[in-house]
Length: 204
Image 1 (tube, rainbow, N blue to C red):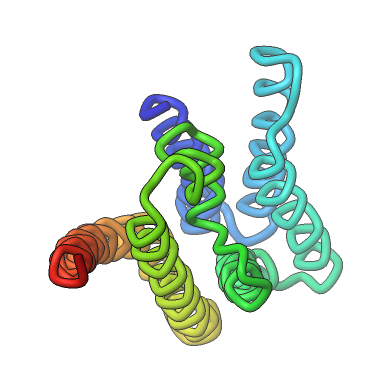
Image 2: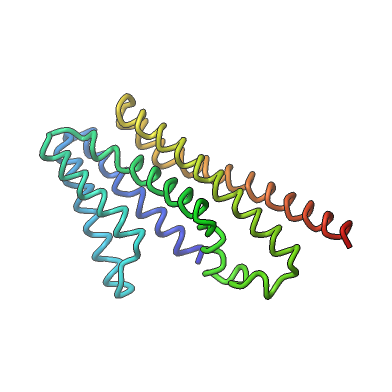
């Protein structure tokens, strides 16, 4: 699972880095063409290796190809640069939507991977199930704000920053800030679960 996540992250960054390097030396047109070709190559490679293409790959590269095509038509790389912001804004909307529907996305993903039982109320004590559910509700809401804020920064970077600075934000900036944020969230979740366990013991 970790290797798969690393591969997805690495492949997602390569079109961006490729675009930045080639645009620097050969211009926006060739940078766009190289990034789009790599996006198509990633789809074909994943299908060849796994006989299917994940929704993440379709979504990321589909957006890359659409916005890259618009950039080619308008002779401006700005639309290609907006791809990370659009994806992050969409992810924030999905997180908030799942929170609003009372089906927090993060809890569903962990349950799908086997990290938690699907039926919390049957497998955990009623009090413990509520504590876990409340923790993931809060995490889902906060992560939506994280990606929304990063989407806003990505829009600003696409419009105002140099290509090199934009590549750094997309590659290093998001990765490092997400790692730091997830460490903070894991500590917050641990404190939440500990506090919930203590409250449950007092109520007995």
